[in-house]
Each structure stands twice: as structure tokens, then as C-alpha cells.
Length: 214
Image (cartoon, rainbow, N blue to C red; front, side, top):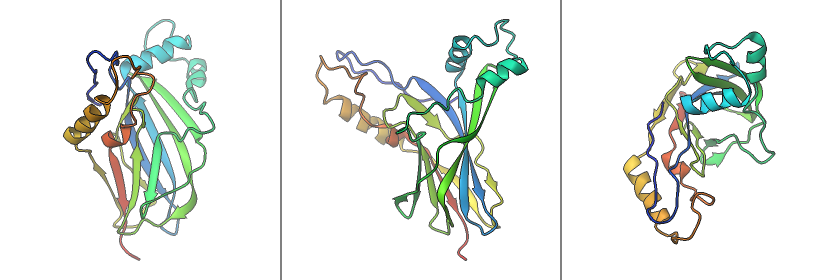
């Protein structure tokens, strides 16, 4: 699971961030014309969050780590109850501009080896041909309550020959410095936990999908 530093501002009452760790996979889906039409995102939750989620739903009461078919069905979609303004912590850019996406579809969920892994599909509002400049995909929580790491599969489905997906990691030293600078602006009596600075983008892994010029 992702090893991400948690921070505490001495004397200010801030709790460590992040609280949830998710290993993320990104599948980029192309159409017959070589354009990206959708992304399938996988989230593998850390063992503690997985355990709490299973217990809260009354699943696996015998604690054998195996769900029955009925329990499995109850788990599917447990993390898909999104608020209307929730973006799924998924950000897609093409030529520097955000790409609109639909709501999540086709959820799945499995519980194995003490971890919950879910997937969901996000349709792009309009197909995009990445080209050499590439399609940029980021997964992050701006408030850094959840830490995402793209260290699962970055698959390309139906991609034209020569297309590639590459993961770029952030400069953690620079991200840490920016976080400490943001925390230093808080007063000792302020509740940082409730209004944690929006630093999640600084810690975001980035997937760049590129294809040959056509």
C-alpha cells in the first residue's frame, strides 16, 4: 500500500493526514477510431479501511476473510454513493483543459486477502485522440484526507499501435515543503483537521497517455 507521510502541526491540534490510502489503477479505453472514450478506475483500499468497511456492513461475520455471494452483492457499489458535486477525485486534462466526464457506471467490488478492491467506469463527455501531446490523468483528493497512488495496472484497451501510458510521480520534497508552508499559516486555536489546506494535488501521481501523430 502507498507509503505517504502524515503530518502534525505542533500545538495546533492537527491530526495526521492522510487517513485513507488507496492504490489506484487506470484503464484507458479507446474506440475503433483511436480515441479515448472512457476510463475504468480501480481502488484498492488499505487494510484498516477495508476492515472497518466490512465490519460496518456486517459482512464476513465468521472472520474467515471470504464473503458469501450474498455478502459480495451487498459490497458492490458501497463507495458509489457520491454527492452531486463530487468529482470522484479524478481529473483529466487535454491540451491543458479539463475533460468532462459522466457519473460512475458498472461498479464492481471484491474482498480478498483483507483488502477491498473496487472498480467503476467513467465515460468521457466527448472522445479524445491523445496524440503526442497526451491525455493527462490525475487521481487525488484536494483536501488530502485520502492518499492515492497509481501503482496498480495502467492498461490501454483497444489502443492504436504505438500508444503508451506512463506514470509520473510528484516531487515529494517540494510537496512536503508546500504543505508545511500552508500549515504554518494556521493559528494554534484553529481546527486544521476541519479546514485542511488543499494540498492533495501536490502529491498526485500523473498518468500520461500518448499516441503517435495521425
